[in-house]
Length: 384
Length: 130
Ligand SMILES: [Zn+2]
Image (cartoon, rainbow over all chains, first blue to last red):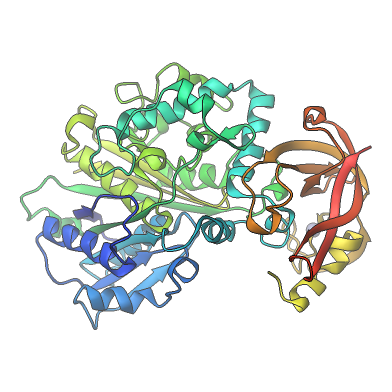
């Protein structure tokens, strides 16, 4: 297999973009990535999108987006693994370049979520859970993560304050990211006094509904070396599945798919958790970040809450997590999230992260997750 | 909203807790499956799940999906039945402050939600304090 590099990244401001369509926000991000890479033709396009069918009534994104990017007749594919669709797009594009099938691949992610009302958005997101045996009984996504949070608090003594501190940290980072949907700080008190959604989770424990897109340009490392930019390599891609019904898992508080995906990625890159300098994780809810830190081996099982409280994961902590602001502050256009995570890591490794820069970052990791942990995708990036 | 056929085909599980037990390793699949996730056997027998168990975890839904709008707030939990199988379902007839991990519950057949005043009524299992 060939070594793969990221030579272009593109993302526009995330938020509620009533004036822009799905194809428009995708194309804007893709143009930024093309310009960053200095290319105007691609060999193939892969796009991650969870549910354009339910959110805007549009399928067949492969051709639609290739067309609007002026790239017809290139081959194109839309891939889906719920909220991990963006991570899956990256993995698919990586395989395509690594295999020698294509030289220049555009990997994108997009979700246009505000063309429907709140109930319709809740329904669309709910399709990532088991429709017949979870959603049928009135559970929601905040509800599923609330089940995990309650169990984590009972088993490990994780506190309500510690959950709030995840949101506070990610908003601190997000306040330094002008592309974030919510680039402002929140206090622990604000989180603890926000509206209850599903006990014990409150609205400020939840990532928002977002319109957004993100794009990357991948090519072989040999080609990337000829360009004038720092080379950022993708040295590992790991993916794993698990049951989509939370009740079918033996350990409610343990995200086995993330553990398995990370195990494969660490082995492929020849890295250990302590070798990672900067991390982007799937904090769709505050409790998710705590469980994911544990499953990635960044902290001991059950110690995630304490690590956040101790500042271990803050911007200047031992292992900075979600320097972009995470899903919490940056926003969570589900199909775009996994791609945007990669953009933040590339910026960190190129030392282009501005006030969010982690000094001397050489190795970064992204973790993108579908549903309540039914799928996880982990990538490792290194500065060449 | 499910179509009649989509609702009808789940009735054995929702009304009677019919499950499939692997003839090779004993794994109980609910809902039934064609392949055992533990040993990959395809030989199953139909069994009925236990009708009592304990709460593994729970939450109170305050912002519900549309079909449940008139019910919120309501409790949903994961319950481990006495045969080890875990189900997601509503916990009813129980004050929120009485909810507790480890609390004993039993399974009852109840209305789950309905489609307006003249629409279909959907039934299934719920949990009540034992
Ligand atoms: Zn078996």
